[in-house]
Length: 150
Image 1 (tube, helix red, strand yellow):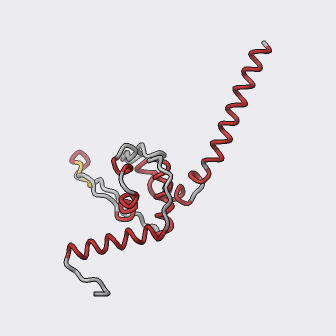
Image 2 (tube, helix red, strand yellow):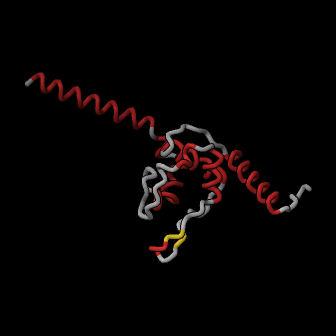
Image 3 (cartoon, one colour):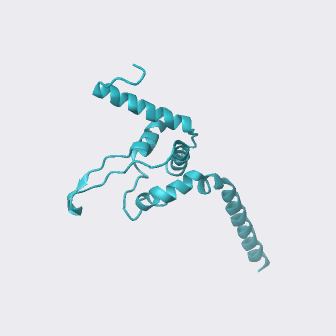
């Protein structure tokens, strides 16, 4: 009886330690601005951990997470094209661009890369601005449009 009680108390103590140490590791993930933006904008379609939400668009197993961070930033900024689903009256299933500022997009990118890709990366608003500028320059080159400074 004493042995079982000691074993039980030991298991409870380990569970409390694991629970408290995981809480210490998670605040940057769950209480960050990136987590708030994810909850506001991404959660409905992509679910809590990227497994797919009410809109049923899972992103957890997408190749996107193995690509460079700039690709993830670009996808968040500019959205993604989706297929037309004939069984849903021809509704396009793409992702719209995120309507947030550079700082929020940087925080969101870090949140999803840590949460879904399990890649602890750092993204700054300057990184987001750089990706936007590269995209604009690529579009101008493709369209043959000269930039303001040219």
